[in-house]
Length: 564
Image (cartoon, rainbow, N blue to C red; front, side):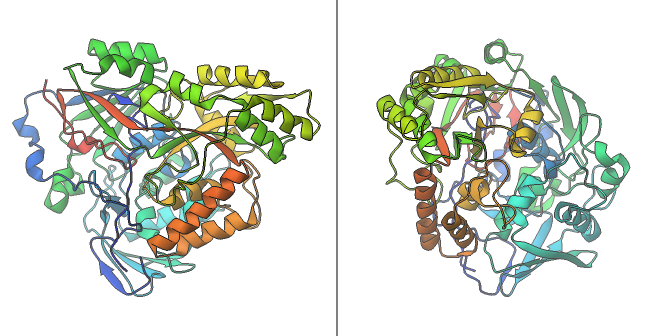
């Protein structure tokens, strides 16, 4: 398997998923302890050396980090969540078999210390010895297989009716045939066909290994607001006050505190994530000093430009805000209607008003930093007159009315979802389309969206690992190969063929062509309307040291130290 590089970005903070005042290979035999990755874009900076991070004993400031964010987590079981607010906490609590090295883009051994494959179909992973879960139980092959069994089998005794394993269904169900534990220190994963993507997929936060003991004891309450998440990660769960705060404390028994991973052991003693939904209130607290880090809206970020109390960093966008349609619900089954909506809204004006210089108008689904971005695609033109004509062509010359759901939390891709939706509604009213604006609790919002209950809605995405299979592939490949996803009921046979090819093709140049063609299909079908590519922009207080503005979807909290 040829070693290649992969361009990624972290969904860090409000411009992505902030942790820091963030505006918001070929199938050949291989034995690996340092994984190849699957595209040819530029690699990010390497992880810092141990000398970059002082030891905890060398620091006199209290190492308690208080982070202000726009919403609460949905749950802390990584297998059943998809939202960024849940992810950022899960990443502190759990470890996966493989990981991304620091702020770089390199896949490295993690709970698996090495692996071997002769054909890129059968993969044998050697697990680290002596790793313990936070509850003291062993993280051995039986524990790892327990997690895979739970992810894979819809009839597993520890899966419950109200749970959805969306990441597994989309990322892994079409890839993995079976998982075995040959002995107590090895895991064997057999794929349905050769693929170079397994290693980078295993880095995803959703495949963090949880304690079987805790899952069995807590049953359906595991890692909910009344339960307790238990992993092997750098931090241990302490408490959760819903819609207020989540607290984790440093795991001094973390397996990586010594040896090759010691540079990534945390200095912080405690992290407090505070939920502060109002942008202005959160920003005021950040300025007043009650928060060490915060997600901040673009309209507030402008006032921090040039302020000597803050350090600004910027990384390319790897996220997208979009508008989606349920094509099983009239009139969104008609491409003319979707085209009309795309052309009736002044998206450039929306970018200027709500994002300013911190985002660009999205011309297609994937931002430029993702392999397969198609630069030849032009943004949908703003032309209300043509929009009226398209509606008339399908018998809707008098327009129509529909519910439109906007997200109830602050995200980088939609920093003020309600106001932005009101602006959309005003433009659409001019062509006869009435939006009935609605929202609901974040967890219920995500579930109803997944269940196909919304006719039209706003949502977004940030790349977990930088690969197009985790971007355009995640959103459009069918989790059931026989029928469209219930979320939007969008169907295009050629697109499915391309996305499958992209998943198994080892050559980056060929993958780029495949995904560019897929991008064109999504654009022509107006499967979704891409709105904004927000940059990963951070305004970090100068006493917060060691935070890396990398591109990969995770907070680099293990590097942070406070020097007040």
